[in-house]
Length: 242
Length: 242
Image (cartoon, rainbow over all chains, first blue to last red; front, side, top):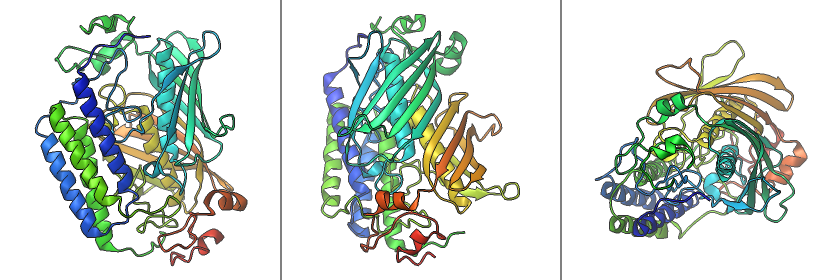
């Protein structure tokens, strides 16, 4: 278990509340059948909310105050972020698995806003979920890396508005490289695989870390690249996660 | 060129306006640094908008009034939907290519709400974009299918807030199967590939069409499965697209 940096619980509650409210709004916005006048009125009210939030913003190289790049707490992640209206959000947890085999799982029901072919999950949204699960399995093994390969076999369409189970586990650890596999199934029939994923995640080399994340800071302005709690890079961040 | 069914331009303008307003709001919601009280007030106002839209909704088997499943106009698609706050949205267009080679392209700049590793596009969002482009290339060739395989090689991280060029083309046509390839690059350096995609799309067999899309109707309640304008299935829809 990676120790997390402390955070402001009031801010976390408020970010979660806004994320939930916007997620619900996005879901309803694709299903509503109200007329043009009502839609335009809703748009005007949405722009008013935007005006109130845009008065103070972080730069794109500064992490959100609630984020922890070492414990991989990312509150606005489009896969898992409690503050992201795009994210389902996936609540990924470590599960009991065979000896030395890190395995993660998430249960989720996906709405109409994620539709591809009529009635079914967009293939790209299935890919987003699998990328997130595979990355979480890497972290669960106290490893870390960026996706260098993602392969998806869509065996059967994934139904919307249906409880799903998503799983991912490590197939092989090869130095900086982690090979993973994952699946999507319905909760009702968890062994009938709908989507099968494979992935390769690679820990960036030190010179790549500098090139990719050299400008990234935390909300306090300190250099805060992602990495494992055991990485030298992580120890440079000034966080108390190590 | 597939003839599109006509639509209500006032409704299209209103759906587009709300989609744009919510997309902007979602983008600002991940960047704002206002305090908990302001976030909670924004959440309350978002819930008010939701209350106004939820009074009338379509069922999940009924397509939106503006959709055309034959011309593949999908206004709430999480990849291309003008009414989707999740979608960038990708505006995919057919481009000049070698003889008999359907090729599509989209230019897009992606914001912080699509972030994976700090500063870069989430691998799963890159997959979503590529799945959408590959599917559009299939349609551009007057073919159609569901994703059965998607492979992504992430050669270099994809920067956010940077103009990108995404491309896809058909590599091979094998009966019901279409093999595709695609790329993501920056507009500044379009030949330096950041993400390379491959895909296989397959047109469902007739019995699969019934199993998958048997319950799908258009806003008028008529059976309206997806398909090509030249498909027998398409001619069953009662649309005037054929």
